[in-house]
Length: 412
Image (cartoon, rainbow, N blue to C red; front, side, top):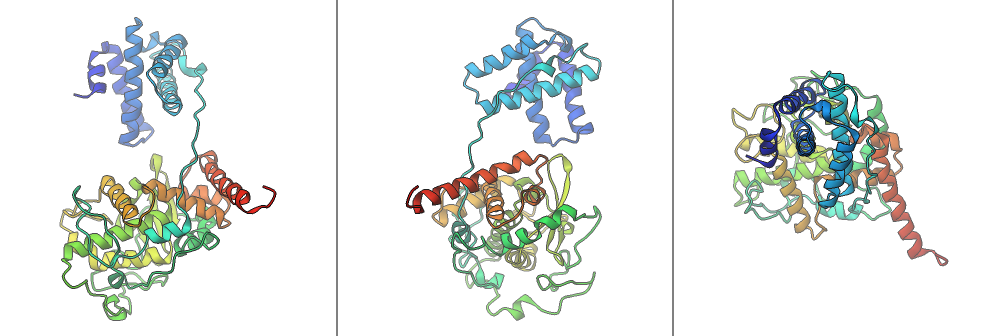
């Protein structure tokens, strides 16, 4: 039993009942994710445990003094300002719900102020560093699904059927993926993905069918070209097992999609085959709060996706795989922990600073803004509910400009 469960069990019965009802409210009425519900419930249980020590027995006993003393105690234990701000937000959400549900006469958290969190600027990979990270592999790694697996140094360029472009300079567009996203980012604001829509270009096609990237294919029609026939040397690397080849192709498409679309790791792992519209190169993504959006991706990501669907996914697929786009070695939906391991090991292999899936999201947003995309389009692309969440990337770009100014201007 964890600390939250232990504290929950020790609460007075009215408080335990209130916490359980609040969790149902978050999940069923507000459609919050299980992770968000766990975080809110953990914060509220901590608050009510503190209130109980101060003599409170029901949610109606909560007042501003209790709330402030709870935050003060957390501060003395070393909680960061961002943690205190999040916990204050949890407390306000709970007290507002308790008042609305008739469990308290007043909303005690209405006057609770949050400490203003200090937001550090994210460390962002340069465009040339991302180009190094996204080099298509030429050797076969062991499975990153296993903690003992070694990071891939390169990828199966032959199976993907593309040659690697030379690393971009900082003045160049980050890569075709980000460039196409920049060009189409504004289009996402008006793009509507039909919940039941399926990909028209063969995302669920039989292994023998393929679609030319960017071409429109009618449902059920096979494409006119075959990757193995059209691309010399598209067969697996001699000596590489089918499982190793599949893992390498999957790792490469994971990296490409994270950067090209700027999506969160949970959004990537949640993608199904019918969420990919390959004729228009769009992903249907379900973000926080189950908000749906359409996100474009570029030609390099399409090529990686084609290689994975043709040569990789069939190797891992089992009857239990369902419609999941990305699969683990055992055929289940790819786990976010494995994705983090893939990104970390790819960065290590490329000699880059330690990064994460969210680091690629930061890079995509920053490179889009540096390439001329407007802030609203980037907000829509990233799925931010508030523009203030997107504005941090403008600060990153300004900091880079200031650094370049200091280095280059004779009177800096």
